[in-house]
Image 1: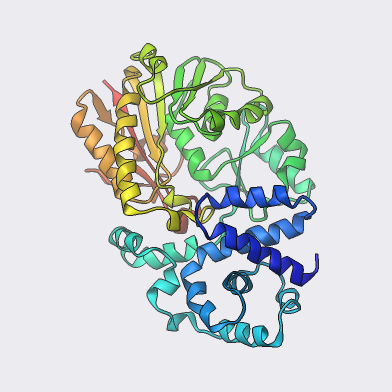
Image 2: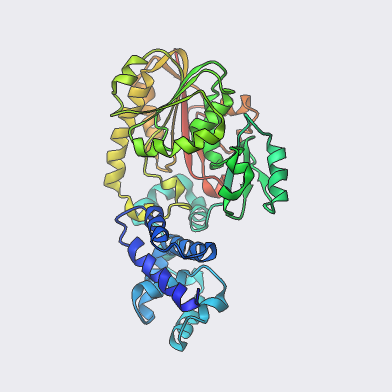
Length: 422
């Protein structure tokens, strides 16, 4: 595609995404369906340009007024993902001079908001938690995430799959915490790989893999993934159970569960039973009360731990939305807890970085439910031979909860708490 045409397409897509009416990934996917003639390189340029602008929206909106032409074009120039010479060939002389001026700005001369590129309501809660580490987190959130894969340990070994990917020209490294994971810096078309089509690998952030590990689901047990979504953790748990027992994948969205079906077919698992439920008090839930060995609740949340992948969320969320979410989270956790038999394990998790959705929910549940005993995550990690140093925090012993941060652990931001049903 000619440089000018590609830049125009970036501006066109940005104009649609920046309305913030729908998730960015959905808008990008729809645009690609409407423009099927685009090749993989053009699609990669468009997508990465959009996500760069979303990550650095405050900075680029600060710089854009000094340029010329339509605003979406100016933003596309600032965030363009590709060789600089290619971009400059699409610009007129005035635009080139403006871009040079923007490139010459020293980041140290910028206001804080133009450096962190976060909504103001989110800044102070993060500073309160991290102190001087706030800036390391802000910088990490403005970078794209690596691509983590989970190896299907039911069918394959991690070292074998790593060698297979290497032969395909895709170098990877074992994830430092999860024994199931491989990390790629590039983002290849995985669907073309034989390892993908036979179900040997699935895309799953290392943090999400750790949640599945913490559940410690075992052979022959009755297990529930209460908010299964597209089933990433469901598949990991089913493999950990060695395809035995019974694993229910519940979700209120039949559409999300539909995305699990092709993944389930590739996985070679037969112990997974997806089921759409109307709400957390559905009759299916009542019939299983007191019968389940392990329950994981990866609760609906703000998703603010995933800003490297979903930078639009910081502009689409609000304090009011978070507050409404916490009410739902507490209700879902209470309902899921009823499923457990004595001796069963409950795991609550989010991909949020806010205490309101994490520690505060867990502490309130513990205070209200004397029949549940906190299982310190540090001890669980140690038993799994996953070094707990830096992964666990909070509680009286300082290790009750799992806390993952992008700048510390190179995962998405995750939280998890675990309990034993007495």
